[in-house]
Length: 315
Image (cartoon, rainbow, N blue to C red; front, side, top):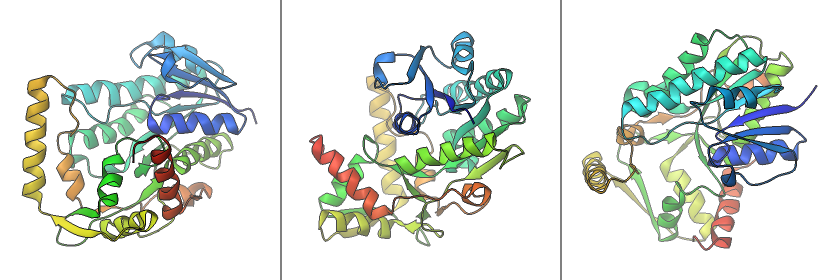
């Protein structure tokens, strides 16, 4: 079985981990990048300069690939149209070109696609899954990835700082909100497992699969905070925050960023995502489809992440 991979989104958090793991496993990798300097130089990695709206660049990327890993997308956008242009049209274009090149297609979706009504981002991820079918191809898997953490991730750094300070904020919901949470290298492994499943015909039909962690029932915020506090050797004070308090903060922050012309740090509808009670991977699991299992327990993954933050003077 040959091992040639095409990757979009390689400059992102998960994309960088995917390229690193593909390279370590002996794959020949081509990665799309608007700015090639943002992808770490690695033996066997070919950089194709371009973006998702550049069909020639995507065609060059897909040429000769056995598996096309599509991770590029927006998690924060100023408008719903931006989400659609990048997350939906971009996925459809990439899937079509990958199909023309004969490559299996692995699409990084999000667990939020399960509830598209919660936010424009969630809607765009659900629509991106639908777009794959519209691209008239039969050899694809969309993975609904859960919350992901690990070295290099700046998005979860504020939560780590908060726990280190002794506080654990969680949404005040009628029943404790629960979620799956996955170490970044395990997320990369899940993507590769999906690609191999398509290559080996372990998965024959197009499908959307959810990716869980090592805890089948997920974890409550209180559990997640307590495990991270153990890593820091801290006693924490849990604080259940009511929705109006978070809504007011998000609204103020978005207004300030809008006035200053900055990209939004809080996406529209993110509060709905935060207060949704169930982001646990339960149905159509990747692990059931191809036997993939996460390898990094939460405490071990947190310890590795803390160590990376500390080594880079972020904690």
